[in-house]
Length: 89
Length: 100
Image (cartoon, rainbow over all chains, first blue to last red; front, side):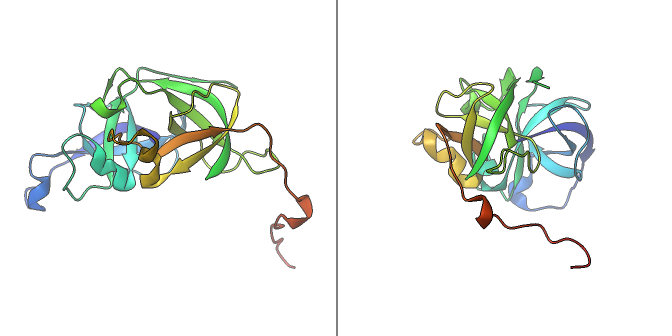
């Protein structure tokens, strides 16, 4: 999994019908020390996350194991809102 | 699978139900020479590993396998704590230098 900050939202009225009702958020991956790392991408929210929060993201086909996403065409899902990160230096 | 050192952990109270009760560890992938390589990542623990230990982890769909039949939403999981490893240094590929 990777950590990321929520930086935006995506609205798409015309989309695959299995994505109807899914909340799509733009996320910026960060390294566990907090610095932005890598490209932004779109992930499905399953935990009611909001703008500015740091979240945990699952990518790949395991994203479909998150709540309610079994048959949806998703490859990235937000599966947790981070309370704290501890990393030794 | 890849070798890594556990350098921290993540606490997330609000998360997918399938992750409740699972420890989330911050991993630093290592080369066999113990040099950090690649990006830090977060992985689910399946073997009781802790900060400071050297482990190996699996990525992708298979990361959810240690927890079957529970369907855990994970794309990286720690599946072994390393006692030791050995390797033949001469067999490691040498990065190509420019101009050679």
